[in-house]
Image (cartoon, rainbow, N blue to C red; front, side, top):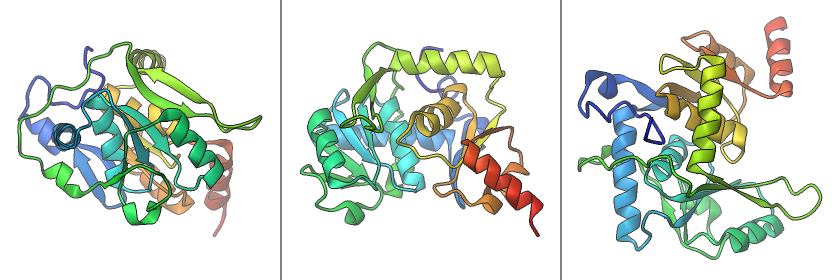
Length: 253
C-alpha cells in the first residue's frame, strides 16, 4: 500500500463500491470513500489558495461533527501536518500548544464556538468540502515527514508535542491490521475523542488505512452505541469505563 489511506478510489475513481460505501458516519450523516477523496482535493485547493501549501502545520479544533472527521482525514491525505486541539482545553494549555506547535491556521466546524481563543485565523469547515467537483488529488504517500503533532496530558508539566510521521502511523496500523485481521470489510464503532491516539489514529485513520468504515459518536451515550453495535459492527474501541457503563445499561430496565 503506497498511499497513506485506502479510500477505495485509487484504481477505479468512479467505481460503484467507492460511490456507495459509507466510510464515515456521525449521527445521521455519512460520507462515502469517494466523497472523502473529493474532500481531500477540495481542502488542499482551499488551503493552498489561502497561502498554506501541503506541509504546513494546520490546527484542527476537534469539535463533535462529521466535518471535523472529514477534515482530519482530508488534511492528512493532502499532506498537511495536523495539530488536533481539544476544544475544552484551558487557556494555559491552549496557549502553550499553539506557541509550541506554531500552526499557521486553524480549522473548525463551528468557528463561533472558539472565536478569539487562539491568535491565528480559524477557517470554517462546511459540507461544501464534500461537494467538490474538481479532479481528485493524489493521496499522500507513506513517507518520513511529520503527519501529526499530538500533545500529552501534561501530568508532570506542560503538554509535550509528540511528532508522528506518516510512516510511524502506517507501520503501527498495518501491524494491528495483521494482528487483528482487520480488513476493508470491517466497520469500527467508537466514541473516543479525536485528539488522542486511540480515537484519531487507531479509530479514524486505521479505518481509512484498511479501506473500511467508521461510525463515530462524539458523545458516549450507552444506548446509542449499543444500537450501533447491533448493526453491522465488527470492531469496537472503548476504554474500561465505557465497557462498564455498557454492561450496566444492558442489565438495566
